[in-house]
Image (cartoon, rainbow, N blue to C red):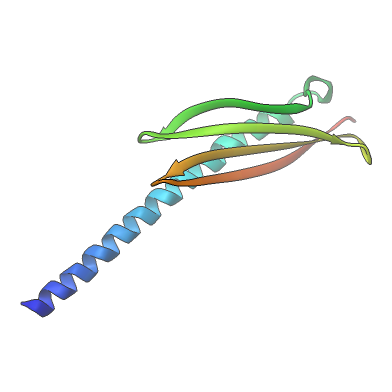
Length: 110
């Protein structure tokens, strides 16, 4: 009976670990998609319409009751006139651990 209990507890631990990993992967994928959608919106705009600066554009719930916050940083480089860098960062907290993912894209004045 003790050996059977030990085996069952091993399977239960594996199941719980896999469930957490699946949930983390789902959150990361949804955050990446939200960042990619925002980045594409900026990249499809005209260069002159995209203002430089930093914005916390929005916050929303993507999974369960987890709140995701998105920040957009648009900057220019003096060495590359006519080119703006767009960095979209999505952050959230999962089980007390702060997490984030970022995507970077560029828009050119041509």
